[in-house]
Length: 180
Image (cartoon, rainbow, N blue to C red; front, side, top):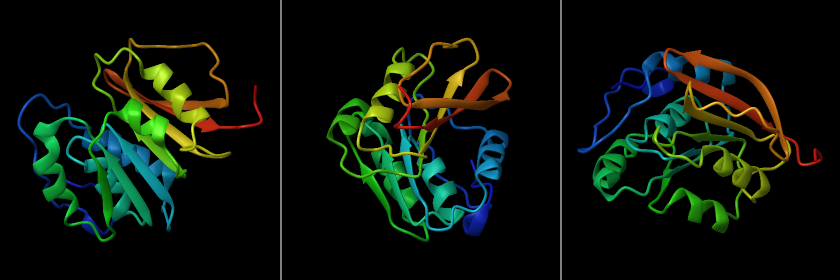
């Protein structure tokens, strides 16, 4: 698995042992192409795994980056991978749900890539939108399986057009704290 753009383009990252579903190169290129230059923006990668999305953000100019991962088996690879970053990537080894509840810092971009069988994706998004992690204008991106569709409204969220990649979809969700 390689970093697809920015100053670290082409750099290979380690893959930890165990079950992992790395983000497709095409998906990462498309998502970060839509975001453009991150020029000092803050970026949060929840369910980080290898840290590839945090590295893509750092490689493309993000100024502050955090990676959240709860699986101990991924710790060594994540730490080794983020060591090459041009900016420090702050790694948090905690469950996503607990991290969201304890959050104090907000972010410009939040990418959530939970395991496809994870059943609480939409509750996670609602929790992020209502937490200190999000402010007006924060963009939440949720990677989900195509069949895990949710059409109800979520408080403080405005849905933007999603991106589809074979069996998976990346939802683009803008936080609007004034919305009901």
